[in-house]
Length: 638
Image (tube, rainbow, N blue to C red):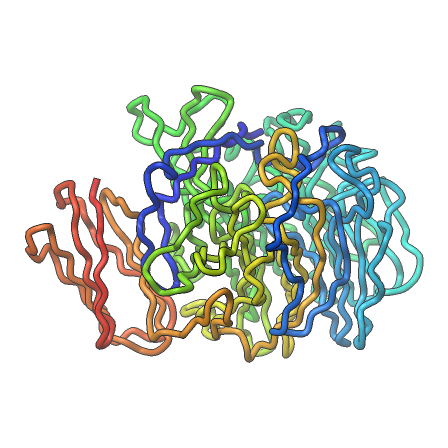
């Protein structure tokens, strides 16, 4: 459905850090475009040239960590675990056992189309993980597995079968043991091209309902239109542990063709608790929205979280023109990487990476900005279009700049089609504390020279928490200390006990081997990924762990976006203790343009938005005073 996207090296859009504000990236980098495949990129490669043979430098990753207990539970040559949102890939059971899945290929490559691709599965019996698997659990090629362990003891995995172009259910009667049964006939697609990229969770008052979502194969990948939509988002349900399914790939009326032209791979997530089900979807051509059912999936209510300004946008025939002047506008949008979590009161908590899109219709491509740096949070107690920023890239050395290497081709980091802070995944514990994992780049250190063989910065995975239903959030904890390692695609077990249980992928090259034309050319040298299970103690979440530098926790952190600004600028404050906030804006002549006060703010994340419509174009200085500390940064008004 979507046009191919152009990576605009535009880190000139919203970029700030948890530690301090981030300076503008040079225009030479900000204005450098590069073509990448569309959002369906990399999933269904059949034939291609092999990736270039890259000689590895001496700075290969040391795959070790001394922070938390972790185990390598898998290894895969297919290293793209999602196009956008994280799959539900790990389950913590009441008896302390764990089950994890991932898209696996033991011997495949870009040159042969990964013929052995399928579900990698591993099980923790309460004492140890099983041996690393060498084969998939299915008999044919599949991808994008999600797992549930039902209260009746059954274990279900859903994936899309590329050999038969169908959704596949693979199950067994007891978790962790026994033969798998494959089912390709139950979840029949409304499209001759099949349904793909599924998500699945358990629910129901007895814990034996199964809820699944997926999309029909879009035309851009070789599929067909279905019921007026190009990539229809469909819902399926079983209320008896998978014995029968009374909803099979139905289109929920609130998101039919009268509302949206279609959806793209992985731009959605699902959660369920008791008889409440929540679906969230985001993307760069439609609203970020929530669908919620309180009757186990019978009826739905839709809430728009972040409004896309053009109704029922068709990216093949329309341009991103908001005001009707015939000129394409740049629009802040969800990057499609979303997560949703229902708390103990069945309230939905939504997370989304963000980016900007620009569609000029001058070619088959739209554009997005991979340097846009904001991860948004929203819950049902918040109004529409009021989501707040709770995570960005970290300023490790506290110099007010996200330092970037000068090499690395078009971009100084591996590309995934998302913003800089993205891939959210969430869980909750018995005390109703919410835990969030996400990934972001590790700032460049000129002394450590922490880049891969392509000159790209690595991404790490960070975890933070909220003890007050999302009102405030802790500072992030980096789960990995080695700056020469890519740590991405972290999936959080929904249930959190004394630990936040995650499964993630890591290797020593930034990015993945599936992007570019030919595949692998965008981030060359990727040949594998190690699948890691880690238990992060909940007591460790909320303190910043050492990475490439020894990070000293400050009493506050300030971010400012967008910069340059037009009609408004937002300052974000991360407070580790209650503080008084004062902001003064000066022009180039030292004149006070406005003073803004926030008295007695509690610890956590806070936003302050300043209306700049009356400001003349030019350079201004924003002085922030938090407690007894002061900081000044430059603001450009365009």
